[in-house]
Amino acid sequence: MYINEAAKLSGTTKKAIEYYCQKGLLDPAISENGYKSFSAEDVEKLKKISLLRSLGVSVANIPELVNKGDSLAFGKIIDTQRRDLQRRKEQNDLLKELASSLDWNAVKLKAAAAECRESVIDRLMIAFPGFWGNYLSLHFREFLMNPIETEEQENAYHEICDYLDSVHMEIPDELEDYVDSLNTLDSQEIFLNTRDALSDVIDDPEDWLVNHKEIIERYLKFQDTEEYRNSDGAKLKEVLKRFNQEQGYNSVFIPAMRKLSPAYDEYVLKLQKADQAFSQHYQQ
Image 1 (cartoon, rainbow, N blue to C red):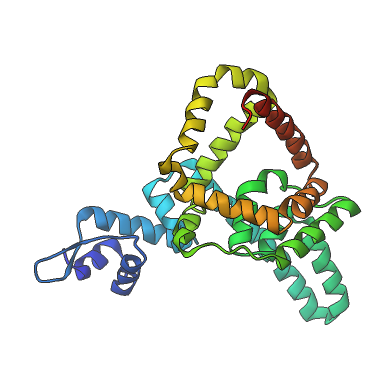
Image 2 (image 1 turned 90 degrees about the vertical axis):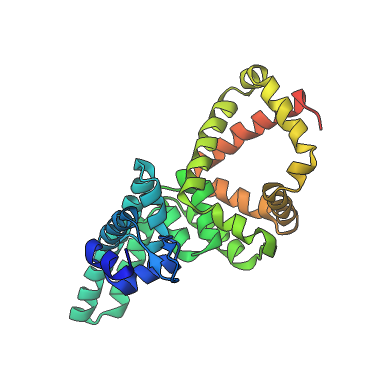
């Protein structure tokens, strides 16, 4: 069917359909005369897309929900919307108060207090939209879900902000698509599963190393292959390694993060013990 019929059956507009096609949400066949030809499956997908848009889901997040649609994918969107709604309500209440009182200083103090009640990760993601916000969310979210409670934590928070605001990580053009792919919900789920597996390792590293000796040795051999060295993952690892060495990541950022989050500090201590055990078994 052509776009007119697809629009009618799905209850959307032709302009919206064209936009979704441009964004890669739909990939209709092309007829012999060069027009887009939509299938019944395309129409069903359009209905789902329209529903998600009406529920406030961004176009960028729709593919994960339509194509995968598991509870983890929906849960992340729901959690984000919940925090946004809470933040907007607080902002709206303060705006009403400002309109009524015109007391700019008093409202500014309340706005600052509201910010302090937010979780650390929410504050950081507002301060650093884009790469660093995504990076922090992916790697540190579970350790930064609580608000700041002490002066030491507040100082560490500002130290992290100052650090991130002053450094520059240059990602090679050839790796930009790969880095973007790491921000998808699929990649985040893989990372979380890997983090869960790593938790098993650091809880009892000696036992894990003994029981997984064959897997470890296969992986170490794979790291010596041209296939691994030429992979995007290996190239990005080298970029991050140079960044860590040259930009003070390990000497400034990590110590500040450990002060900011007691849970992360405990995690690092376990990780260091696991690394010592690994080094004893596999000297490199």
